[in-house]
Amino acid sequence: MAEKLVEIKNLKQHFHTARGTVKAVDGVSFDIYKGETLGLVGESGCGKSTTGRSIIRLYDATDGEVLYKGESVHGKKSRQKMLEFNRQMQMIFQDPYASLNPRMTVLDIIAEGIDIHGLAKSKQARKERVYQLLETVGLNKEHANRYPHEFSGGQRQRIGIARALAVEPDFIIADEPISALDVSIQAQVVNLMKELQEEKGLTYLFIAHDLSMVKYISDRIGVMYFGKLVELAPANELYENPLHPYTKSLLSAIPLPDPDYERNRKRMKYDPSVHKGTNTEFREVKPGHFVSCTEEEFKELQAKQ
Image 1: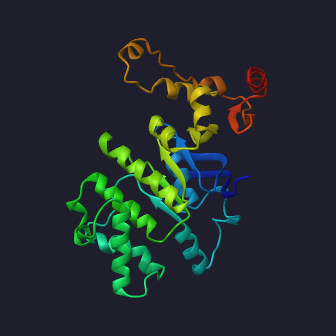
Image 2: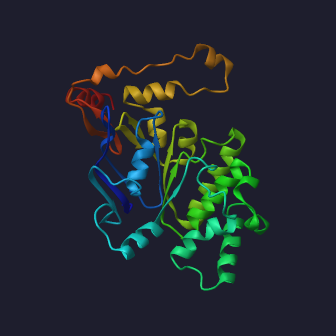
Image 3: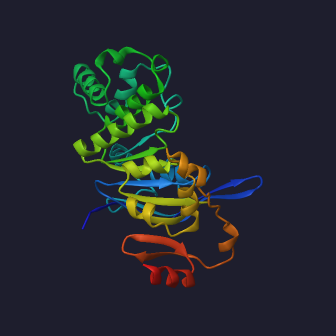
């Protein structure tokens, strides 16, 4: 049985605005196992990025619990405990342009975590560590003294990955790490992430809205809709046997490089009013395949499996 690295239990993240309360994340529960990649997908505004930021404590959760290696992430912690937690859990941000300080050299950007956690015994050791990280992500040591504006989007994202790796984390949350990049560069970054995972035994939460890329990198995929998790299953199972109508609508929108298929492709639309006011729960229809459904739908789905 795989070891649970992260456990999310009934996580809620509500924001209070002048117009009322926005339930960005509204009672989400799932586990992430050591060494796997869990993909989290859904359209913009569904709460997937907020979920990632709440897990890593960039937001304090409104309610629910996040456990990392069996310990609660939220709640009061000593400075030492917070430092240790921050070292083990890192984030790669969506925008490689905004997430790097334009006034710092690449050397100092990558070394920031090394300095905070005291991981280098001398200036030379610090420099050598940064050079090694640059090489790991496909750049070279000549890049260390340059500034972020001198790099392309793909190179900046590699710098962001090097920064995340600098403190030798176990778990990385990748928040739409390829959405700001050209299609030709996206595959390079995803392949780099896969290679690093195999080399270093990393665990990823990979947040994205591109389902085809998520399938390529993920072991399991969770689908979010308006702050709730509506389906969770192994990647191939989700694609071949989607159960929730929202998942079906997302999959029906994926284009394929086949003119005949595209000519006849029927786009499914999800009607949320179908479930409005009904008592839906997140239920396991078959081993490892969970879906948000009513008791009646649950029985129907089980009968079809």
